[in-house]
Image 1: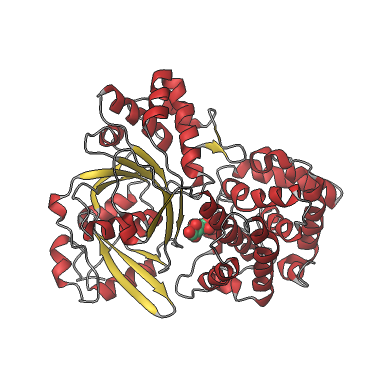
Image 2: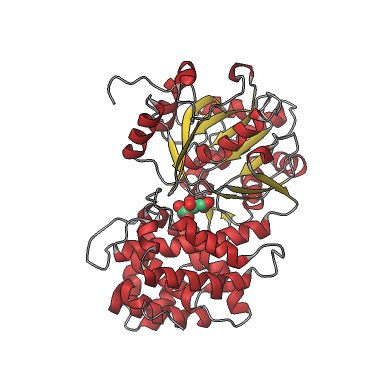
Length: 497
Ligand code: CS2
């Protein structure tokens, strides 16, 4: 796009009229929020809602310092734009563009870890939020306990001035706040973890305990960790997206993000040092987020992971292409209706699960996102427990069948072989990749599908107490055998009873 200028505060006035831009006086903003993890998701969700709150008149206390924990790429894209970027909301009807202005500061933790600690320990800071994906919590996904043997956690214990993990930054940053006699802050996880606030609290306190029990008690007593359910589908941005945004804006934006128009956020209203009114952007402040989170993790993410593994195996590269396959669409619909929704019926009296399911199928079919199945398939070891296995546990506890859930899990197990049904090879992108490849080999060395299924269920970081559970092993064995002999297309026809 040679010859084009770059998105910048000075360029705002020249943008086409249809592009929404921030109203706030950015220079007057103080930074009350430090956000860890500047991936596309935070830019499409929290930061956009935060702009809405500021535009609706929130006090100028809620600017955001965005921290990339590992790589400089996002900072390098945003810095020349002074933190401005475009959010493009897309569906079959078209694209709506807005420029988001909440980001006031940009940091890269690996370059200057002290600056991150100082930001967390700054007197203006009131909220430390995070989107670091499941694996960023350095925990055991089945038990949600901190992995003290995780290299980053081991490092962070001995490096209070230069941590690496989000948990390490929070603990050592809070230690500085406590030492400085500053007000406590709210720690807000926006990741797809079950009870994400409670989980984060457990991990932070477990690490703090090893730093000083006084610190651990102070955190327990003074800080808040609200649970939240966050929902917006945000695929990884591609060069083609950036080119399309530049054409629409009339200037280049190296940090543009593309997402679906849908947005939901249920967050527990437990903030110890204030918060912006994110309801201006669609947030719902609730007493308990858990029912919302269960609904979303089990229905949306459970279905998403199912589509992802089946899509990767069958060679359907994007979610909309996969869900357009009649057999997969029927299967995912039945999985949600027959096996997932019944585990949610009591939890959410006001929610119409049939309408929610229909809406999800519509969101998956969004033709304007090109959401890669391979992207969702990443990090399965960290995702399966809350997306599919909690549902399995609830079903088994009332002796309900898990035939379809087992086929979804079998698709994950089978995808670990590293090639699709046509023999095309791909890599396994997962923090436990080496263990998972070895697991798959161990399972394949067994002589019966039943033994193969049992080997998978004994993989404790994912299956935990489901090891050898007969109610799971038997349908899993059938599903593994079907996928192995007939591939995804064959295993989906006819839909299992
Ligand atoms: C997806 C989620 O990549 C994935 O694992 O399932 O990122 C999903 O798009 C979001 O949770 C939607 O809110």
